[in-house]
Length: 336
Image 1: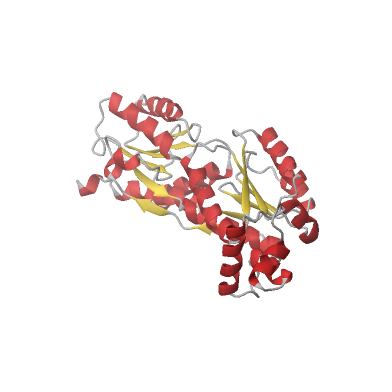
Image 2: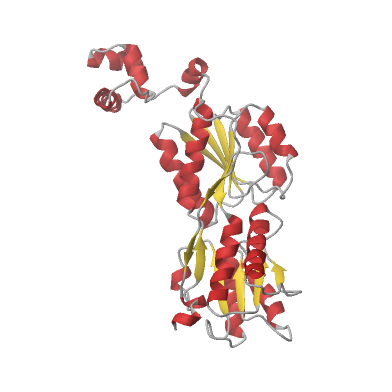
């Protein structure tokens, strides 16, 4: 026989409404009472009827999370940050992977809305500047927060990509490199921001943006970074440093430079973005810019829950997380 709220209430000698409020983690219930209710619920084997509860509260306590690639450490860490906040607030996550396919993203979002999730956190696969889709989603009435990839007039939490590009490029300049190339990502807001930061640093130091020194590669394809680096090294005046828009691109670049017989950081400098877990263990430890992934996820979850509960209103100013420069062997020429 299934355990009901009235059974927990009778066992504790309190009202059903108090039990219900404790299980919903309402602020008007003391921590001691909530702890007693949760323990008794566990002891009795209580399992909440989420369908019945959602009919009463008009809330499912479920957040949909849509990301372009679950295999990427960036998004796994963002999800970890989301879960840290969401679980503490009594929310459950429903995850969807889109494989960088905008059409699949639209299908997954429609499905999640159909399942009546309370809100959505999306790392979008849509190209930069495509705003119509977000206006349509806004009309659905489901609160939405975007992560990593920004679009105008949306709630957004992510790294300051222009600052990421500026930090990485200026670091290379400060290490004495003067012919700095950039392997950018595809046409997404993150790639555009990092490219702008690269150009900003060069302009600040009155250095030219050399024709052909900007190449494109997929964010998480080492092969793309390898190919782009080979192209750059074939120049009559090849670069003496490379700012790669992601750590996987930088890994491919590292492989190419070593196969060309170049020594890092003496012959060429290299820096990526992402602070992937194995970057410090490469044959040449990789310098990188850390986007603070867990913080992005936790702040996105906090913002979304505030939107769901009405604590946050319609101000869509983006929340930008300050990046952190991590210097390792691949670019630290002046410390050798």
